[in-house]
Length: 236
Image (tube, rainbow, N blue to C red; front, side, top):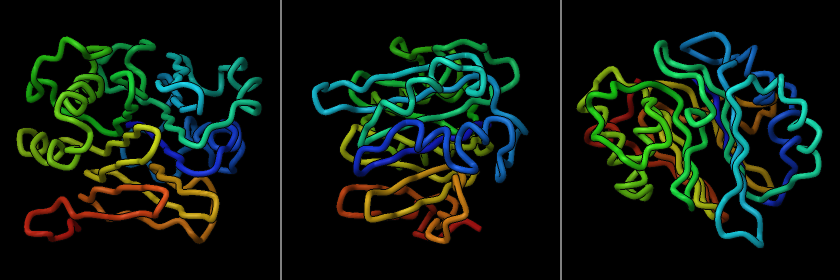
């Protein structure tokens, strides 16, 4: 449905994260290697990032494909951040194609992306949602409950909609939180920091695939995984 990534560590340019790797988010917008649902991600893209002299994250979103945004390509090499969250979108059938429907969503402090789908009927009304799409409504619910309860919220929503796919990625600029629930996710730890991504952006053997139904937390101290499956059992 979508592809997303997060970076936490030493500042890197947006180009080095989104555009330059051999299987970058740019490439994944037309040729993802591990996407289980959909074939291209051409219904918009977005990036959010934190800078040291600004408390709130900055965002750049578009309803156009990432490959068609020449303005971003021209400035991405000179914008750097130590915490980045980005996504390319493959819209669910029937959902609007608009900038406000593209991740990352924000509550003014956190950023959040959703890779998957959920029945909007199981989500409570949200006046603060940025769009009517399922991902925006889900983001509003997470922000309302508190991203620190991300795992519990995912389990609750999945109980209401067993067919939901709920790979979420969130950050407040100091840590990354992510869930695997129905789609792929990989983690890469390096001396410079850690990346969490729907799929590896290169063939570095350091990438580790995260099992389904897990909560991942990335901090400057490392990466931790917690099972979201009943009784601590991993999902196949």
